[in-house]
Each structure stands twice: as structure tokens, then as C-alpha cells.
Length: 317
Image 1 (tube, rainbow, N blue to C red):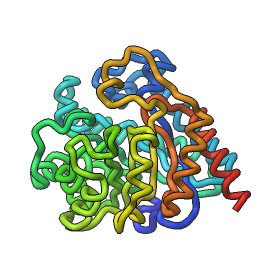
Image 2 (tube, one colour):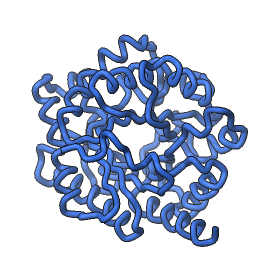
Image 3 (cartoon, one colour):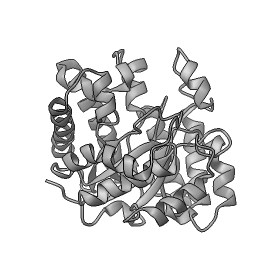
Image 4 (cartoon, rainbow, N blue to C red):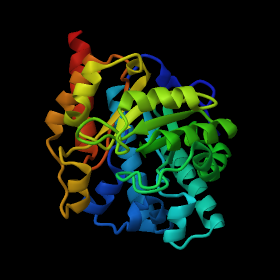
């Protein structure tokens, strides 16, 4: 059952950890084949299921050792209709996969036995390529599309819906409306290019304000993912009225652009220690940031380094 749907604990002042780059970790570090980055497809394979379970558990236990709350994103970033079609799945199989992904996280939550909150997030991804906005949907078209997953996740133990790697405001608005119609709180995580703007070209602050204004119910909070801190620190430093709406960061390990990452044949895992320092610096810059994890190229090492630097910062305060 959902525990925190009506009172998301990550809206307080305490720091929460989340996971890292599940898909790149599974492909480059664990050796799995993931067509279209559809991690949920591994749930049907005993070895793949065990790998996702272990990945979730090791991140949860890191949060437990640090005495921090934990948010885990289900392996459902690609478990939506268009991607399901590409993977040869019908709607019934997709529904079962979404439900199974949440059930797996429930099992880990019980095993990890955190004394701090363990929040289950039902993960939604973009309808198209996260790096390329392509033909933009209207907010209504996006709502219709994402309602499939939002309605299923609302009937599971998921505490909220989180849309990762959103690259344009209309799709983010559609996700927010789909979540609201399903009775779910939601978080929107935008990705940005090396200039700090969304792939659609819109400034990050404008996208956040537009989503807040146009959605029938504003998202609970916003995040940034799939970009290196070097790409957006100047935007956060400039700030604006929208800045306190940011709650979370899931940065890439690599400083490469999205285009460069698309062409890469090897994993750029960056420098975990450096990424930890950069996240701590951003926490000082934007005090509303309380949720920290990783994205492409990151794994447990990076989240551990981030947690360590945040801990040192808190002790020094």
C-alpha cells in the first residue's frame, strides 16, 4: 500500500537520497542488453530481476547507513505505450510490468527496514527521445498518453509519480494533469543542454513557471536530471522566483553534451568525488535542494560520494 501519498516526507527540510543511473549501470557495469533502455523488460528474467533488486537494495542501505530518507524510482521509465509497441508488448503486458516493478520495490522496502522514510516513486519517461523534443505534443495529448501509466501506478503502492528527463513544458503539464486526475502527487524533472536550457530551447525557469501556471494542479516539486552540474550551475546561480520550487538533482557523471552521450560507445563515469563536491556546492547555493541522486554514468559510488559531502557540509554548518 502507498504510505506517503498524502504527506510526501521529501517536502520537508531533511535530505533524501535517491538512486543513480539504473540503465547505464545495468548496460555498462552489469552487462545486460537493454533495447530502448527498457529496464522493466528485465523483470521477467531471473538474473535481470535480481540485478534490479540488488541495485535498489544497495542504494537503500546506503541511505540507511547515512540515516537519510530514500526515494526509489521504479524501473518503468520506458513502460509506456509507444515504447511498449517498439518492444513488442501489448497493453496488458505493459500494465503487468508497471505493477510488477512497484511490487519489487515494496519487497526491497520491507527488507531494507529503514528507520527513515522509504518513498516509492512510479517513474514516467518522455514519450519520445529524452534528448530530442521532436514534434511537441499539446498538454492535452500528453495527458492522454501518460494517463495510461498514471492510472496504473495509482492502483499500486507508489507514493507519487515522477517524470524524469522531461524536455519540454507541454509534456510536463500533461504529466501533471494525468497524475492529478489519477489522484497522485507528482514531481517533474527537466533535463537541460550544456547551455542550461531545455532541449526545446526554453529556459529552465520559464518551463517551471509555465508548468506551475498551466497545470490543473501544480507538481509537488521539480528536479533536474540527465545533465552535469557544469551545464546548469550558472542558471541556478542567477535564479529567480522559480528557484525554491527545485527540490532534487540527479546529475550525469559526464560533462558531455546529450549529442556526445548519444554517440558514446563506452561509459563516461566522470569523477565521483568531484560530483559529490559539486552537489554539495549546489545545496549551499539553493537551500531548497533536498533530494540527491544520479543519472547517466553514475552508480552507487557517485551517490555515496554525494552523501558523504552533504554529511560533511551538514556537520560543518
